[in-house]
Image (cartoon, rainbow, N blue to C red):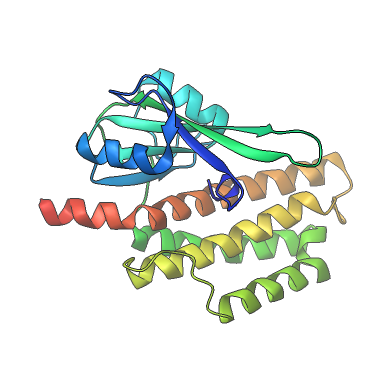
Length: 235
């Protein structure tokens, strides 16, 4: 989801109850609040892994295609983004249309608690480093170290990964999830390294798949922690 949010993007919401045409994001959020929405959850699904989704199948299918969605808390709506580029050559800008659809009021799929996510991430980071080093993957060498050093430098400059009000553990979990995700993306983007045989490449993909899954689960747990805490307080 973070990839489509930027200063230059124009966001509109389509299909809101009571609106016959797409509306701007500010008006849409006000309308959703009037409809009973008290919070927003993020879903980051991937093929075979409906992370954060609750159905129905029609909504899940669109969210799977987009690989991201927002699920409303307090009212049975969900938002799925569709990204366009618009404008003449030299003045192209990004437009994001959020499609508002009905969702099933049910617990989101496969979202761990912050404690579970933190434990899984620590194991995943250790396993990923060990496997990538053993397979001599490009993402475990100097390129990875340089990228991780740059990541640490950004964090030390006080970059906020979550808005004020999130529990400190959520910030810690998201930071670690981003680091694990960085290792995975480096391994995929920087060639095969020493994993030159099909068996070795298959072993690398097999090792990275669960690590990437853990990182996505942890991100969802961190982003959604405020809503989850509010729900527990109500109960």
